[in-house]
Every structure is written in structure tokens, then in C-alpha cells.
View 1: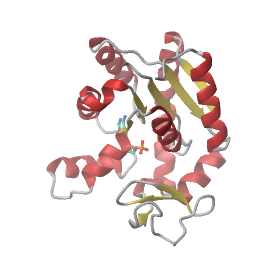
View 2 (view 1 turned 135 degrees about the horizontal axis):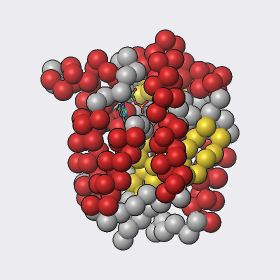
View 3 (view 1 turned 30 degrees about the vertical axis):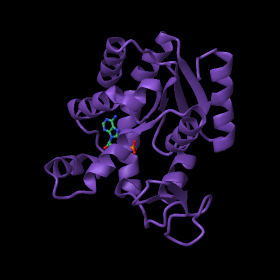
View 4 (view 1 turned 45 degrees about the vertical axis):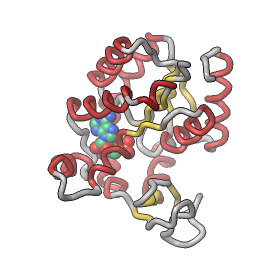
Length: 224
Ligand code: AMP
């Protein structure tokens, strides 16, 4: 059965990953994060693709569209995405948004809801500079708001926590600049499609999730 097909967009630090995890669990759809896919590839430094991607990801630059598209295409054609998906961090350019639209048409699917998390600069900077990520399972923590029980150790799997290279202040500014250059066109694209839903990413994770759930229910989007 076709379940919910969702996008989650917003600036770095708006809480996309957290919401995508909650949605993935609640609606039993895979959380597809292009950022996580790239970080996984980078773990293997002997890999030629990793060497190529590192120059983009560590500096906060966008990976070329053709590389991202190939990866997302393969992922969406995967069996587990047939029941629905939550895409996090994709699309990030107009060209990606249009290619996604074509791909979905090709497989007879459409986006049910494109969630956009708006967040203020202060909140973004505080969240990103305090963010720590598990090297092993990618779980996210915050040194002040959601610290692990034992410093630098993941509660979920015991993996070591680290600060992403692109969460350092100079790189955050570059990521926000790139993001700002692309987002307006993408938002208009989904607004015209009638599926854009804006929520404040400054709210707590529970409040944002509640708003998304309410919207899905009100819109009669099939979720089971
Ligand atoms: P994220 O975890 O979503 O912040 O992504 C981390 C990094 O991965 C970004 O700064 C980009 O270098 C790369 N990346 C992730 N998603 C995309 C995308 N849709 N297009 C191009 N680059 C991406």
C-alpha cells in the first residue's frame, strides 16, 4: 500500500533530522537523509568517491546534482521506499526539485507534504555549534539541551560522539549562505504544487511533530 511521501526542508540546524526520525518511527517509512548517506561514504577513506565528496561536504558546499540524484534515485527505487519515505536534506536546488518530480511521476508517486522548518539565526547557531553526532549510528545530541548520559558516548549504541567538521562556525555561515541562495525557488515550487507546510523550527521537537501530525490528519493524506 502506498503510504505517506514526505519532504522535510529548512536551514541547517532547524531540526530536520530530529523530525524525520520521529516521522519515520510514527509512520513506519524510511528516513532518507542525503547528508547521512554522504557521511557514511566518507567513513571509508580508501574509497575514491569518498575522496571526491570530502572536498564538498567538509566545506559545507553542495555535492554536484548528478551525484546526489543518482544516489536518491537508487534509494527511492529500493523496496523499503515503496511504502513511503521521509526525505531529509533533499532537494536542495531547483534542479534537484525538478528531477525528483520527474522521478516520482515515473514511478506513479507524489509528494504528500513538503514540510518547511523556519528557524532564527540565533537558534541555528546555538544548535549547530553544540551538536554532537554518534560516529556509529548517527544519533544526534546537544551538549546543553540533550547531552548523552556519559560524556562523548552514544546512549543508543555506545559509539563515540564527534562534532561534524561542517558544524564549525565558519562553515555554518557558508552553509547558510548557500541555503539562502536556493530555498526561495524551491519553496515556490512546492507552494504551487499545493503541498507546502511551514512550521517554526524554533518550537520544541514535540511541538513541531504535533503540528506535522495534525496537518497530515487534516489534509487526509493517507498514512496507513
Ligand atoms: P546535511 O547533513 O543535510 O546538512 O548535509 C551535509 C552535507 O552533505 C551538505 O553540506 C552537502 O555538502 C552535502 N549534501 C547533503 N544533501 C545534499 C543535497 N541534496 N545536494 C547537495 N549536497 C548535499
